[in-house]
Figure 1 (tube, rainbow, N blue to C red):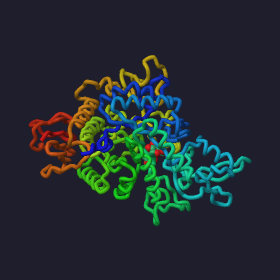
Figure 2: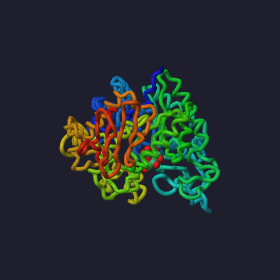
Figure 3: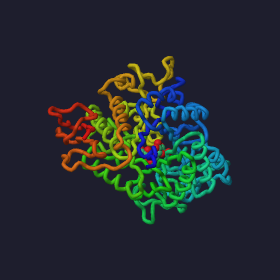
Length: 544
Ligand code: TEU
């Protein structure tokens, strides 16, 4: 039988380069830092690293404002360093996924600089420049709003100093949206794909993948931004996107070791979502329905079933994601009364029981690693890091916070530099002799959460992840495939088999439950109750 492609079963670790490890001691993470931690990542057992953008950027949105798609930001390293890092990682069996940002560029990108400088510049066609409404064009061209805050339009100033046309920005004003109807935009991104594939990337994560195409009529929205619109949404999930991804797939498939396309596609409709995952389009996409699902047996079972049902007809592997750089950290979210919100923006300062959240996050780790498909781990999840909720307002960096004028705390709380060792900030984030403070402040109470403190402690989150990933690698029934729910399981549990000899049971209820007949407990997310029962908020992997 042909070998299953690696990405169908992969455990992929997300590196936010600014916050992973600081090799040169300037307070900002970098590729040298990642290089030093490759042994740590190999020991964790991950198959691939997905790097958030590492390109030259003014960092108005953490690097999702790309000024040069073919380079590496000087604060992170060099292009040669990135190539070397990808090669060194591969030596250890770890592949690299780079983050491609096709929806918008930085306002410092040469195309936009040219377009902004001159109303007659041909580069204006590469973006969405429009005259304003109202007698003096003082109103934005339509009512679309930015993902961050306020109108999705920014007014330019003409060279003579008078107010000029507006341009579209679905995110920050320093992230002008590209016009994907223009052939030069398509050609450029196809070339960028080849650029990174040629330099050793095994795949790309496609940022905001469902937003690229816009209705050129730019009609007003009726109701909230995400609501379905009569005649189709003017910028979400438009039919023309599929042709773009089909051409990207041809490029990915043209390599002897085919490269992988991973979509960031936030679509609540599973059927619409699955349309991207055809054998001639995107390989896999993040499962945001699962990410936003509350800690509830019925809701999670529904989410898992809907996910598997949507993926089966297109033969794509499901993915399981608990967190990323945009959402509240898992142990914090699961420690709250309302466990459903994944968005950092939407809940903060809410009473949180971190012990409870950690217990659930441990169980969720075993759940996700046992489900059919690929799993994403966001850096720090394996350390059980909580959301940092008390970053002083004057140190916040995220445009979501800055643009909202204090309304939203933004996403910085899940992007705080990792603690590696020691008992006080900077916890070994940079070299020992480094004096520079990390770019976001770390909490004072993270000493027990450092990688060094957890290393070798069998009860730690880190050792749980290491054990589970090692068992997963050794267990042929895990990864790609299907599951079978155990017929007699208590309703408060998620209990399923993978193959004949493996089962996973998660207890989401308030009381202990009996385990099904089994030969051995391979790993459990916490201590067992008396008589071998599975306690509340605990998961176990069983040898059947
Ligand atoms: O996010 C796209 C996206 O849909 C987000 O706006 C998401 O809805 C929001 O962050 C939830 O709070 C991607 C990146 O992951 C994000 O970091 C970038 O800011 C954004 O694209 C723009 O590039």
